[in-house]
Image 1 (cartoon, rainbow, N blue to C red):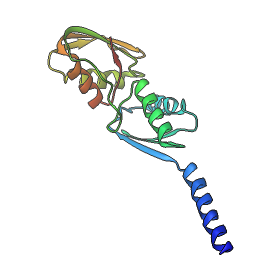
Image 2 (cartoon, one colour):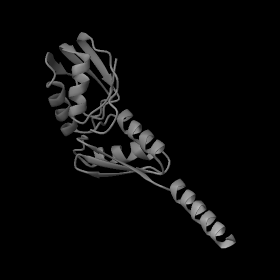
Image 3 (cartoon, rainbow, N blue to C red):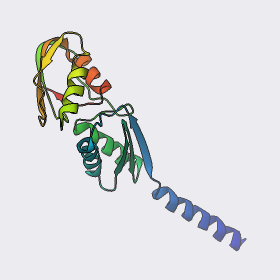
Length: 164
């Protein structure tokens, strides 16, 4: 009987220890990742959460963290860095019809990023242009468009940002 209790307790303690060390993995797809600078930006954004790492393969990013809470924080950090992928929580924006808007926190490290951003922006009905340039972190968007539709188009293109 005593051996059975010790064995049961050992199994419980071992199980608790394994659960405490269980890693959490999240995979996002459709993330804009056109060059080595994008890949580095993705890795750096995720690494802001202690112990979290990112593995990129084209437009797929797999985030590994020590637990589910840290994995969610790492995804949020990636979105804050201007990237977005299916599987991330989309930033909430009030729907308004505007003639212009600024979007901040966008990742535009190279000409390919700018081209992809402009292509995504123009997927929104009413957008006539942007002032996006390489290295910018804030972009002005012109036209007569819905802010909600604009952000959805950017997310679909693998980008994120904060509308102002």
